[in-house]
Image 1 (cartoon, rainbow, N blue to C red):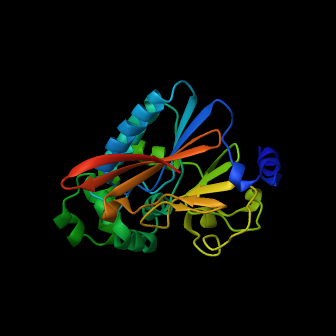
Image 2 (cartoon, rainbow, N blue to C red; image 1 turned 45 degrees about the vertical axis):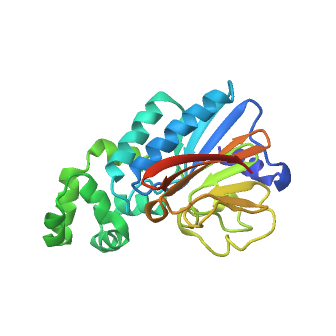
Length: 265
């Protein structure tokens, strides 16, 4: 498998002509961060868009950070599991999922997890804010073990590091420029910002990523960033791909309602 991956990334693909395989359609979704309301609306919009475009082998890819910060991480995980039971949905592990899993055994990691929105995830599984506020780290771990179903943890533990389809690489944060994919570190794929974000040369493929928030999708020659900060902006973005075509679908809070916007890029 590693050999085929290296062969894939050895090709120096023209970024302007990046394409998914013939007969396939892909929808990549940026960081959800507990916004079940935006996610459910976006999933419905993707289903409608997919049906309107006709037959294809369709794959949905979530770019990670389903959890933390927003109000209903448990609901997002449940909705993703349900969607995956009905169609091909692949999920990439983000840095927030990484820290959730590590928090059960490492109090130092748990401390950081709580500071960066993990408290919202724990509360979404039914732990009272008052109980969480008064618990020490060991007590918090005990609350987590009781509240978060083992089935959800096993599901999250099975998230992928990256997905490669056609000329595209889907990853949570990015990659380290100049390093073959076979030797990229999980840390970089889940956490990197620089030098990835400012790197202007070809990677030999188009990278689609989340992790770094931008007000609008960040469309570059060698990468496409689609984390539009759902948990604080109220906007969740998906990128659609078929052949060389690209389009965006976004769900956004506007005047007290959630609206859907679809446009080509």
